[in-house]
Amino acid sequence: MRYMLLIYSNENEIGRADPVHEKRTRDAHYAVIAEASRSSVFRSGEPLHPTFTATTVSVRAGRVLIADGPFAKTQQQLAGYYILECNNLDEAISWAAKIPTNCKGGGDGCIEIRPMLDI
Image (cartoon, rainbow, N blue to C red):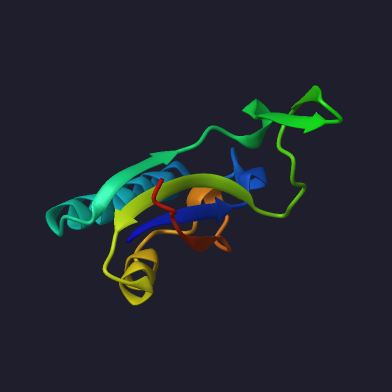
C-alpha cells in the first residue's frame, strides 16, 4: 500500500534557524531518502515552498473563489511529503520515525501518515 507521509513544521521559524542546523536537517532527509530508495519503498518526496506562496481554490454555489495563501490557519504548516510503498501501517510508522521533523528550524514538527487510494 502507498502511504503519504506529510511533514508539518513551524515555518515562522524561517530565517531564525542556524544554517548548520538547516544543513544537518537537509542531510538527514537525504539519508532517509537514500535508505528508503535502497529498501525499494521510496516513490516520491519533495519539500514545499512556504505557505505565503500558496493559492487556495474553492467552489461555492458554482462560483470559483481564489485566495492567496493556505486555507487552514494552524500553528504548523505542511512543509513537504514522502510517498512510500509499505507493506502495512507499522512499516510506514517506522519510516516516519526516521524523518526529521525539525524542518524550518522548529523542533516541534510532526509527520501525518495517510494511506493513498488506488485510482
